[in-house]
Image (tube, rainbow, N blue to C red; front, side, top):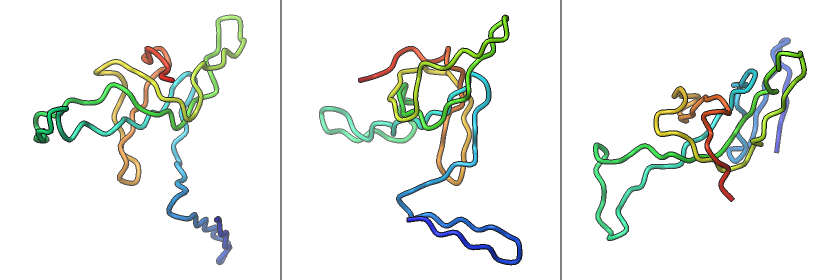
Length: 116
């Protein structure tokens, strides 16, 4: 559900809580990834304290750039698509926070694999 209002030449866009809009658009061959949540407990059932949690190395692609421009001027499209789950390097990307949610901005070359 989307509602649009125009008040005194100011456009206001209201979306339902289930739909989120992001005002962050990656450039060139960059990708925005929402990292998976860190594991709360071990397979044996023990809870892991915040200081012991490791950063996840996989997440979901939420936005992709248009692609990289090759030396001959041709646009090379990205192989990853929005909604795919990907595996990336442990220290890959730059962490950003948008409206309280954490994301990683990285180049497509920092992504190792697409998870099925």
